[in-house]
Image (cartoon, rainbow, N blue to C red; front, side, top):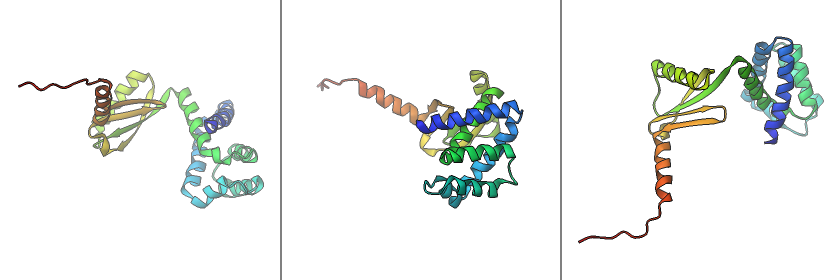
Amino acid sequence: MLENAVARRYAQAFFTLAREKDLVDNLEAELKVVVDTINENEELKRVMDHQLISPEEKKAIINGVFSQEVSEITLNFLDIVIEKYRATYIPGIYHEFVSYANETRNMADARVKTAVELNDSDLDTLKARLTAVTGKTIRLQSELDPSLIGGVVVRIGDKVIDGSLAGRLERLKDNLLQFEVKEIGVRD
């Protein structure tokens, strides 16, 4: 919970700056490069997460790795984050930044889990329905989950729409468990 609050606060500050400079798309892309690079490089991730490595050393590493990849604005922002011992929050800051950016674009990301792969037509239909329900432009990310048995589970932000067969069976089980069976008689 604290991690989300900290990430949200830094993301909001960076997003405010990005809007003032009309650089939301650019700075979002730069943060994505930083987060992807950190996540893909285990050694860099360990350095950023390690509490005994000084902020000066971390800033030097970040500046060395990203000075040619990102703008001065992003480097300065990362320096502040690192200086305040918040380097482990960089991925969370990025995700919160994307949320702020999507909100201003009237856009939402939706994760769709299905038991079988959906064709393009099915994805377009689902996207159109979700757009109609939310009133936002939807970007879909699809993934397979055979444990669903059938149907779909859609997550948009913190909302989940469970239309899977596994979900229906679980709800049916819960409903049946609520009934108290007193006695079952046998007729001759």
